Length: 102
Image 1 (cartoon, rainbow, N blue to C red):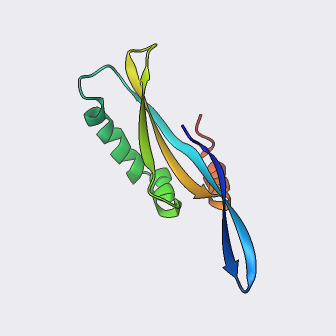
Image 2: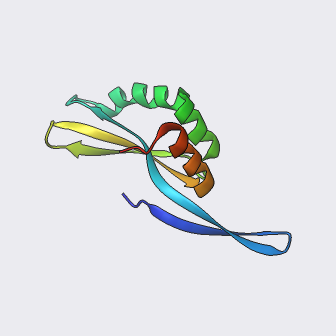
């Protein structure tokens, strides 16, 4: 999924500061075998975005979070994941508040 860590360098008061930016999965859900899975995924995506977790990520993400769909051959359905780039301190706060998404 192209997840990982990258560094962002900024200058503050004449000093270089390196921030770790993590690209992580912040939400997962499944949709069963339907004709238009993206249409059925719209409701859980919207509900998550309006939840406390979703609002936190939308506010603190470096770039706009994106969703990804993969086939789940075991259930003949689809797995969805919301992926966000977020600064290390804010990611730690997210994990402390809501736990790691597995």
